[in-house]
Every structure is written in C-alpha cells, then in structure tokens.
Image (cartoon, rainbow, N blue to C red; front, side, top):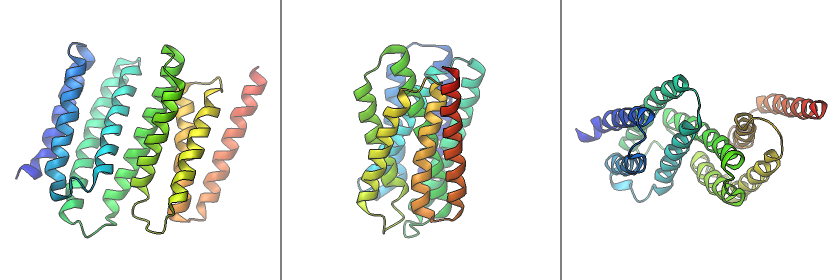
Length: 242
C-alpha cells in the first residue's frame, strides 16, 4: 500500500515545500536536506530489494532535484517560478509512478514508458544544471573548474542511465560523450550570450550525440543539420554584433 501512495506523498510534499520556499526564505538549507532525505526514503520504498543495485538511478534523481532547485533560485519571474514548481511536481509524480511500475515488472528492462520519461527528465535536468552553472560563473564568480567537474560527473551518470538499455554501447562511447560535453561547456562559456541559450546548446549536443547512437535513425542527420545551421547562425550573429 505504501509503495502505491508514496509517489503522491513525495510529489505533494515537494510541491508544498517549494511553494513555501518561494515566499519564505527561512530554513532553506534544512528544508532541502529534508527533501533529499525524503527522496532517498521514497527511492528505498519503491526500489525495494534493488535499492543498492540501482545506485546510479538514485544519484541521477538527486542530481536532477538539485539542478531543478538551483534553476528555480535563479529565475527572476515569480509567476514563472510558481508555474515551474507546479509543473516539476507533476513530472516528479509521473517519474515515481513509472519507476514503481518498472520495479514491479523488473524483468521488462526495456519498459518504453519508463525509459522515455526518464530520458526526457534527465535532459531537462541537465539543461537546468548547465544553465544554472553558467549563470553562477557569470554573476557570483563560481569556480569554473568546479563547474566543469560537476558537468563531467553529471554527464557521466546521465549517459550511463540513458544508455543502459543498449547492451552493445561501448564504454569508450560514454567517455567520448563526457569528454566532448565538457569541452563544449568550456567553449560555450566564452560566447557572450544568455546563459539560457548556452544551456540549450549544450543539452542539444548532449541529446544529439546520445540519440544518434541509441536509435541509429536516419532522421538524426536532419536533426544534426538543423542543429549545425543554428550554431552557425548564432556564431555569425555574434561576429556581426561585435
């Protein structure tokens, strides 16, 4: 019974706590520590006997939570923040429900709904994280080296989780993704554009390189051309501007 209702409890507590934090900055640290602990407890209940075996999934969820939290603190529009909190709480509910279904039918390793939703969740969270890191570097002089380390660790964990259903994926591919994403993070840092756009470019590349190797879809070429042309237009506009 608890395993069935815990996703709803977790999502509701997350919603109420985040809404409270938006209007009251007291006890921010303690409230977020509580949310992380409750996230771990929820995972323990839902994962069951697989809790310690799926530690990367747990780390992915914790990183996603922290990325979303960081992004929320940097948004200046109150209306957008409230709407985003409501949306994210709903997504967390779906994530927990699909993870519960996944562990209830653990032999169905390629559960389509679970994999697709989680993959979307990771890409979205990676966007939040990368955009937030760029803004922290710009506005409060956050350590550039530490930001790169965070990107490396996060891209490694997310890539492992996203590609785990593909048994033939070589470990070298994961290292390639991590290396190129970290290098792109450094290059994009020197572009004088919005940190929202920088995060979008980084996560777009992260998506394209993984999606190409997972799906081997011919349509990927069309997506890549669009992505490449968009980058060229962006660079040309920067040159003309300066």
